[in-house]
Image 1 (cartoon, rainbow, N blue to C red):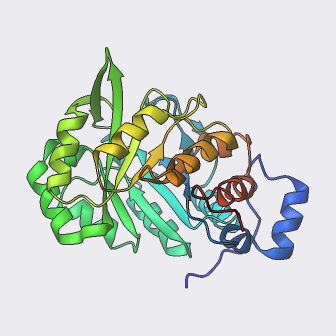
Image 2 (tube, helix red, strand yellow):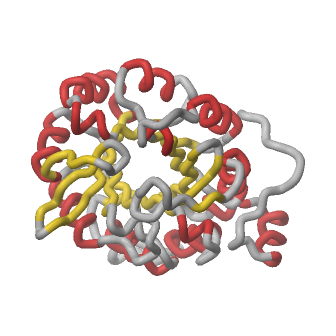
Image 3 (tube, rainbow, N blue to C red):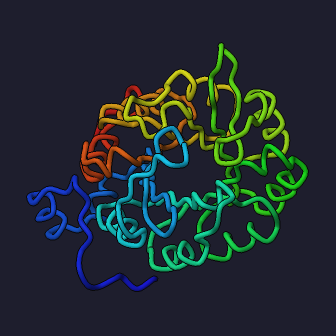
Length: 291
């Protein structure tokens, strides 16, 4: 197990004194695991120029900084996260790399990490996997280099997920590549190809919703989940706990959505991670009462 950090406690805006007292008494990890969490929440730590940031609709230049990535990730771990979604934005935009910093963050965490951003060839893939992360997300490479992506999926199986970042324009579902700066093709054609290649998991983002606090695109997520047998992780737009409950209820109804990435709403203090974990935990499949 990785050593836990000591020293000053980083506190995000949504952590209230009463909740900090509860966490101190019972432990955040206990809050995250009572009765089992069937719908997974992945707090996001997006890193640019060495800082944890959030963007609006994925656009460079819209960053709001939230401090050290290490402290942000450790806070989410203390608050009960079982997964962290860790993104190198500089690598995604092709303007640099935070690889060493992200490797240090992964090494300090006791929870699973989904690592993303700029993983486009053998060297960057091996570097990412060597951090000890549980899985990586491929984005641009899955769109621009299908043969390499297929080999990566065949070799690494469940440790490879593919991010499908979607722009809906005039009813057309187009994918965004290169840090969401270029068109990456038709969503449904790419999804069909990736399914044939055996992709184990998709992370689906409506780019127009990301960082906007306007709610997730449930119709898009449902459509993608119904078009593939692989599980889907929702990303983008979560503003309230009710958004996460709506996603968990979709999952409970049999739609293949296994979890959600949560970013700006947590950093902005719209709700806390323990509140979100508690809310999705009580959602159960139809006919099954909550424990």
